[in-house]
Amino acid sequence: MTEVRPPAASSASLWERDEEVAAIKEAVDILCADRSSPGRLLVLRGEAGLGKTALLAETRRIAEQRGCTVWSARGGETLRSVPFNVVRQLLQPALVPMLPEEAREYLGDWYDIAGPALGIANPGDRHADPQGVCEGLVAAVRRLARRDWPLVLLIDDAHWADQETLYWLAAFAGRLADLSVLVVVARRPGEISGTGARYL
Image 1 (cartoon, rainbow, N blue to C red):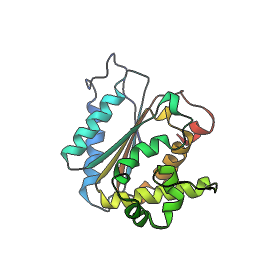
Image 2 (cartoon, rainbow, N blue to C red):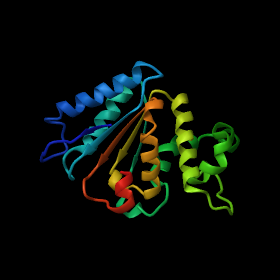
Image 3 (cartoon, rainbow, N blue to C red):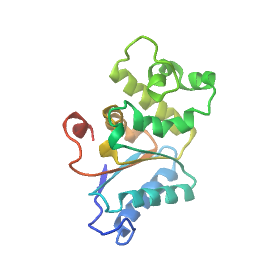
Image 4 (cartoon, rainbow, N blue to C red):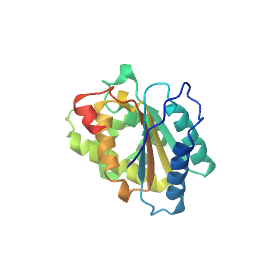
């Protein structure tokens, strides 16, 4: 993991962001070099107004310029209690256009486990095992990453993400050595505590 801390600034501009932009360009170049390239996690950490969102926008511009698929999501202070809210934002654009039978075929054995968390399948009466759901979501992104390579995932305001998404993100980040995906996360320090903080 590479952690990039934007220096203090009075606006969300990219002035004095050469180091951060260079790190982003390098990460995108590594991703695009080869389908077997290891994934990477960049964390943009800083207080409100220091330009994290502007750096995410620049990441999108750089990635799209190089032909990457870019999916993005944002945590919301009032939506922290909605399970899988942020991971749904990330993945639904890729899955929703599929017909139900296509999504079922694509996710295979993980459909009944990960489908309800992604909002594309009825949860039914059973209570899913959180670890199983997390594994299903990791498997879903693995398959989508192969289909949509090179894939860049952007998460803004991760400090306001729901706990289920943070649990998935921690598990997913731990496997990036085997996944050719670039994940860029923007967060504020000190906005989260407890289990969520440990995942983040």
